[in-house]
Structures are given as structure tokens and as C-alpha cells.
Length: 437
Picture 1 (tube, rainbow, N blue to C red):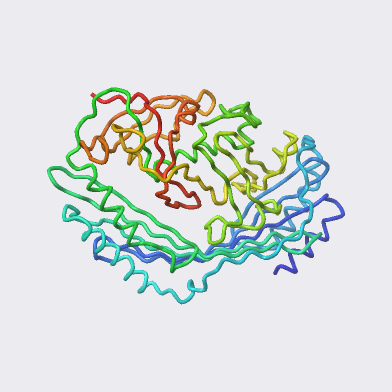
Picture 2: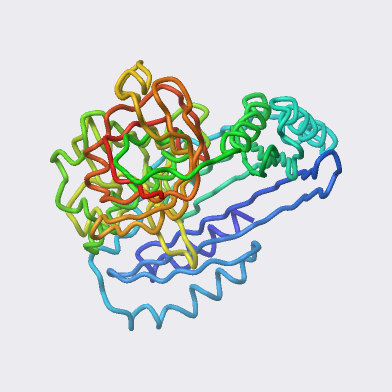
């Protein structure tokens, strides 16, 4: 099949400056328990293609399910006239053929892992969550998932680029009850089955379900704010929107004028590492086929780099960081691989501040205005005094500006957790307005 695709591309290479076909294939299986009852087993496979053709600053692209060479031939033939009618954009640069080694991150366990074994793992997660705290009354979801994915980029001009990965994940959703009811969840993922810490995720579900039982209203005031690792991971996704070169190019990022300047406190060091061994987002080439490498984003508060694909790098006259990511219809966007937040201290939050709120859940983080930086989000968590919990709280509102939030980072701690390619940790922020009662 790959030979047939390459032959089609070679046939059309006289007309187009370059053509690439990306073939993606995945097989997956998952098991869902409701309590100790097996609710569902899902086994599936998907194949899809993305076609991108370039000619003199113009580009046409499409995506399709399945792997049908007739689709490729028809698309390339039918768009020979269409592409000449499109506006020319000199920043639409054809992929320059580069050689990259095949990227294989396969632990060899996917094929031998049975759904019966996955059900046993899910059941162990249920029992772990219930044993973690007597207030956990039920576990409504315990999910174990596994997948093997491969990507091949085919062009008529160079060796095919190939990557293959395995991916395992778990999710536990628990309900706690004691003078009220509260839910909580925990999740874990890994490229290897051996590295999947599904019992720790179950313990986290139990903790998060119990942590807010007996919650009181928080008095309105200014508090130091501690984001736990999961909440901080959500915040990092907002930061990535601010350093996405496409947003900067469109003037919809509040950090657009801060490149090479201090944009956060010295406690913030953040980088993207696509070649991290064992990282779930690791890769040797991005979705345009360009070689990847480590990209410093923030270095001790200095905004070191935006994240680019080939278009934004050309348009802005900057280095391509090879963060291209394919979206719908073959559109190339920008995304991270393994985003890593570096700790700034080995101390604890109470070493910096006596009273603060520890935020364990946030609602509406993605509603932050990336142009003005203003945000107002709902938060839940616990009020802390030193090492002691004063009381849990719910339905408070945290308001402020993203620029002030970045400048107000006091410390990043060492309680690392990784969620879907984002390695995060707790971070303490200077006092901000929290509205309660």
C-alpha cells in the first residue's frame, strides 16, 4: 500500500512543488467498571489519511477516514486547477525533505494484554479507592485503556518518516459521603503498561472526593493561592495558548510583545521536550515532518521562545520549533509534545506563607481572555494555616489577570505529576482576590 501511495505522489510531483500523505493507524481497547460490575468493553481500530499539496505559495489539504489510494489520486487530480485559483501566500512553505530515524516507543505489551487482565486492574483500582478512606461509598467509574498508534509521512522525495507508540491510561471516579456528598477523580497515563500507576490514581480519586466533605463558604479577601498539580496543568494549557505563535501572529496573546523579556517571576521555568525518554508525547519529527528538539519557553521568568510551525516561523522570521500539529481537514496548528514545569525549590508551601488556599478544582480556566489577560474562575479547595487544614471550601471565585498571575508565582514545588504529556507540580502564587461570602 505504501508503494502505491508513493507511486501516486511521484506521478503528481511534476505539477506540485511537494505532496505529503500522512497515514495514521491506531488499535485500542478499554474496560469500564461501575463498582465491581463490568459495564463495557470497547475494542476498536482506526485508520486515516491527511493529504497536503503545495504549489507556488498555495496549499490544498484534506483528511479522510480509511486508507484508499483512489481518494488520494482523485484529490490530487481534481485540485490541479483549483490550486491555481487560490491566493498565494509566500509563508506556505513545502516540506523540505529531511531524514529522521524511525521513532519506536512500544513496550511490547499491547498485544498480549487481555481485556480480562484490564478488568482485574480496574477492579484493583476500585478496591484501592474504597480502602483509601471509609468515607468513599462507591466508585462509579474505573477505566483502564490501552492503545497502539503509528504515523507515517510519505513524500515522493525522501525516506518515509515513521513513528509507533503504545499508550496506557487509567481513570477512577469516586463518590464520598459524610454529612454531604462529594465526587472526585484521579487519572494516570504511561507509554508502558509497567509504568501505569493506576492504584495511585485511584487513591487520588478517593482523596479528592473526601477532601471537600463538610465544605464551608470562604470569606472574601486576599489569599495566597496554591494550585495543586492538576489545576496547575490546566493553567499551563492557558500559558501554551499565550505562547502559541499563531495566536501571537494574530495579535490575540497578552504575551505577544514579551519575547526575550521578563514575563513571569524567576520561579517559572517551562520547556517542551519532544525527545524525553518514555514521554507520552515524544517524537523525532512533528506533523510537518520537521526534526524536533528541546524548546525552552520560560527560563527563570524570561520568555525565551514562542512555539512555531513552518508557517508562523516564516511569517514572523523566527526559528521553527517543530511544534506542528495536524487538525481537522489537514489544517496544521501548533501543539506541545512533553511540556515540563521545573521545580524552583525543595521547600514546602508553608515555608513561604502561613495562610493560603489550596485549590484542588477550578471551573472555567479556559474562559480566560488571552488578549486582555483578565480571568474570573470558580474554585474549590481547602483553607490552610501552616501545615494544618482549617476547612474545605466550595463556590469561591478567583479573579485577576494572567500577567499578574505569572509575575506572582512564589515557588514551584517537587510533587510532580504527568497528565497527557504535561508534567506539572504544585505552584504557590502571591495574594490574590478570592470572593466567597
